[in-house]
Amino acid sequence: MAIPLFSAAEGTYRGNLHGHSTHSDGLNSPADVVRLYRDAGYDFTCLSEHYWSNPRFCAATLNDASALDRDDFITLLSAELHCHGKLYDRDGLWHIVANGLPPGFAMAGETETGPELVSRAVAAGAYVTIAHPEWYSLTDAEAQALAEAGAHGVEIYNHASAIDAARGGGTATVDYLLHQGFPIHITATDDSHDIPRDAFGGWVMVAARELTSGAILAALKAGDFYASTGPDILSITRDGTVIEIETSPVQRIILAADKHHAEPVAGDGITRARFDLKKFDPAFVRIAAIDARGRSAWSNPYWLG
Image 1 (cartoon, rainbow, N blue to C red):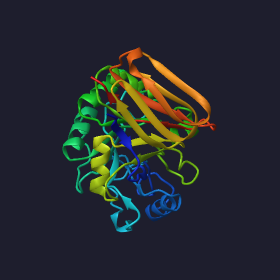
Image 2: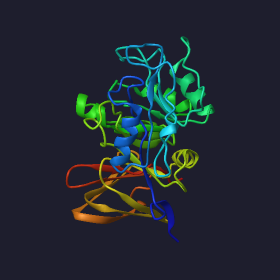
Image 3: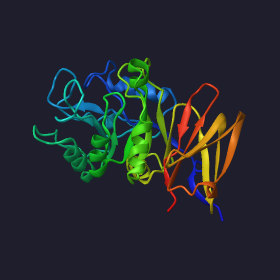
């Protein structure tokens, strides 16, 4: 019997988990950020302002934009958390995206480490993502320390880092952590600062029961979403050793697994693919769909043990 791994049949909500406004170093006001994402067809956004003591680019307070929420569009109280100790960053700072923070969540202390900050945010109820790993040369050891502290996801695509620094990827970090046994999620984000120039390039589609911050947060933590820069994933099912996926029209659908196993299915405008796992008995799989414009969608990883 086929078991659903993901389904968009009941509807999904499109959202940006990582973005900034004039509250920190963005160029758009919070009201304009909300309006522009709503007008672009999004259902929610996160004003994840830089939250640290450096006034050059950071805010000293969280940006609660809930007064701008409507029945058809919401915000999640978020921040890009910083603290000392990151190798290779020009400011020596960790960058950790936390969505669904409680009001009053305290800024990092001077001696707090990146893993300690992740652990505190997770304990406070936030969904925590490892931000733009390629952009600031996150090492495997650093990624593992954050995953051990409870980080939920990794940005496999960061739009601003891609278009402004040609360092927008995170696939290597995702696969390293999966091989180390961490059940990490995959996100795509904008990290927008100057909308529309660096916006609407990476998002998540969340299969939540309703458009509320609690429901979105619960679905994120459960992994009931996919990441995309273009294509849609409609369903993923597993029946024994067979996994099937349905997508919007794409050119390639690739099942990637541990130990660099991969199986591609290619065709002009294909919308389905079927993979028999008996060929290589993987520990985990994830699926990518790539359209004719080179845009991708990524499923979350699925563990098969």
